[in-house]
Image 1 (cartoon, rainbow, N blue to C red):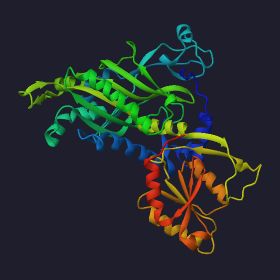
Image 2 (image 1 turned 180 degrees about the vertical axis):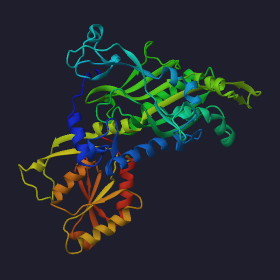
Image 3 (image 1 turned 120 degrees about the vertical axis):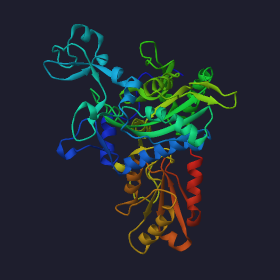
Image 4 (image 1 turned 180 degrees about the horizontal axis):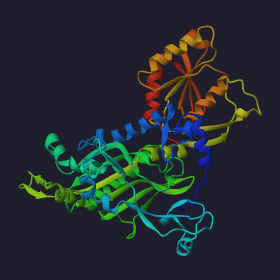
Length: 462
């Protein structure tokens, strides 16, 4: 199959951002004050989706791997950490300003012809000379703002793992090969933030650092490439919207022996989703040098052989994954009329917007919908919701025609709707509606929870 060269689906960033605000996934930070550039707030559906992505990743990395443990390191770290890591010296972007329109650009993103002639790509004005811009946020600890109290907001979560690597070996008795996983916030003073939540100043990373014996690193690097690719298949992502990109000599970071990105075809084009890097023993060697502490691994199963481990890194953005899943799930389709909805041909409900999330990450698993508010149906529906909420995230909606309520749940990505009607009062059965196919099946109320569990476990996206 030929590789896709540009996005061809129904989503656009305008539609995604509109839906995200309308349905409570993502809001502009401090919107009532005009908004804070590069920062976003996650609403009721957004935080549920974000938490499920994180939980799914955490299960994949720790629960399913006996040799990987977790960590939550502090955001504020000793400033020498960032000298050792190279961030103080090397964590920069090339920057230029337009003297006319005052726009600011990363010069590596400016077309080569414009850069050569120092012409602004927006207005044609003159660009300033290129200068280096450090992406770390600085702040101060203590009552005075002097160099003695200088500290940084961490620009990545990986260094917290490296400086704790010995603590984890000693406390958890880990043996190489082993990994340390972490989910946490990071901060980058980005020159340009754009494409909604794709590139922001405050974001969350899901990283796993895997410590291996030198000489086995290439094999483990290839193994983790396979595992991370398979993870997106499990999530039900459109696999033809994913591809590998290997870092060439000009792209390869100073610490890396080899590096690949998993790229996703967003509405704005192919962009990095996750990185898998062979970081060699660079990080632990530097922290040994700067801290004066011996960070060698002592291999007690091999004559107490001593060495500094190589590190295989997998690093994905949590909020970037959230954007990817919304884009991937977004669909618009003309649909046949559903039974028992009161819809008629030619109504606006002939079309629907639907988010086809995997049920394991959908912000709402099941919506409970009484056909009518009266005659005890609402009370019965609430009882059923109370039974399900122990195991699933639920919603309750009794406002409007049932067809319109189905459409609202489709747009939120809810995989299952449970309709409670007059027959439910008579024989204890309910209707289970599937989001993707809109199929409806009748089943006993008592079998509902187990049926939903089975459907989640066996879900396959069409």
